[in-house]
Image (cartoon, rainbow, N blue to C red; front, side):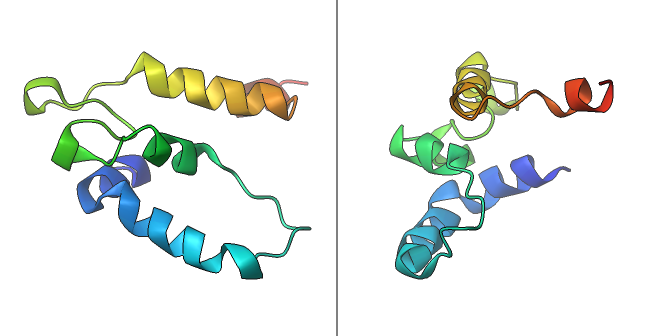
Length: 89
């Protein structure tokens, strides 16, 4: 089981609450990826509500195009290429 599936099992709001508590002490020079925060803000809290990094229709974990869109939007904001594309340069 991968890290995103584990996050969905634990509940995305657990880590989100911690990130919010530590936000004031975060070093602004350190890269911060906001994708998980955006998922939580959209109400995607994991398996418990059927939406997290994955969608869980009928309890089965499936890739959700909505999450892919959030990732792609975050990538575009920073003009980043997917990891595979960066390796083939």
